Length: 169
Image 1 (tube, rainbow, N blue to C red):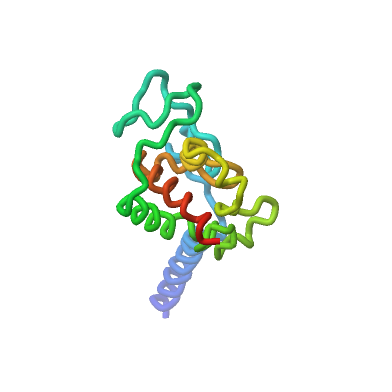
Image 2: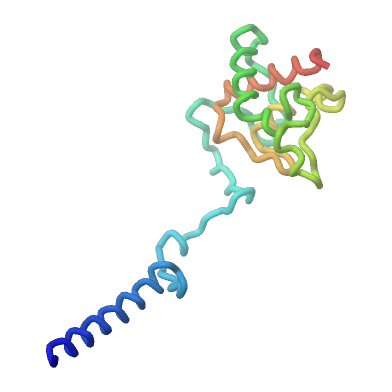
């Protein structure tokens, strides 16, 4: 009988310890552990990144020179460029701007304050190729900067494809 009582006490203590462990493991009581990723300087989504270091040139060559105005389009509008631009547009831009570029993409309804731009409209089509390139590169409004997502050549292919959206109206 005495052995039975001792086993009951041991199992009760183990059960209590297991219960405390379960409380901590299922985040009922949260302990904020310090990690070095949390205390370093970083940027949140949609926050302005740090400026490019002075006199630095990207690996793929200079896309534009700051302060020198909008760049000129070095990529000819041919079938290869338009096909690449269409593929990039359908993969990365269509969700907001829609198939026809009219700003009615599947997630455009979530942007109630500033809806995506109608890329086939006259105000957008009247912009220079360099201005469209700079918008793709640096972003505008809720549109994020895509200069790290696309190479310089891919951004110019997108510019060439955006020019064809006017004809699809």
